[in-house]
Image 1 (tube, helix red, strand yellow):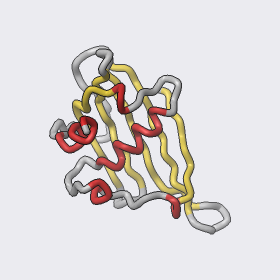
Image 2 (cartoon, rainbow, N blue to C red):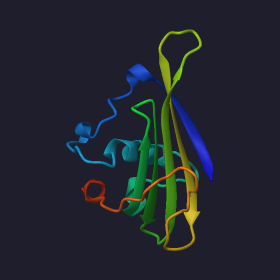
Image 3 (cartoon, helix red, strand yellow):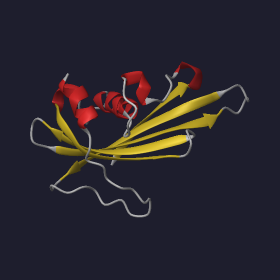
Length: 137
């Protein structure tokens, strides 16, 4: 997997909530949107118009200090990509606030299954109508 990181001043980041998009269910559309924005800026990435649908997702969070998500994405050209997103706070050394770290990792998938991610206890969710409806809009 390759990855890219983005550091943002925490005060400039929108509230991490589905309510920003009119949804209250999990998985978060906000985290999906942020991961897609990072993926679109990469040489090996893809954008919203390249996507056919999201097949499955997992999401883990530690009460807002950090969040990690994984998405299996079907692209219009027939490829499937595993996109993993990490988001968390890092306190500044000068004690003047916090930075938010975002990173996305991309990995091509060769078969119809989902990646095996041992040791982190994830459960794949394929009830993603709210995300796929957002893509279709």
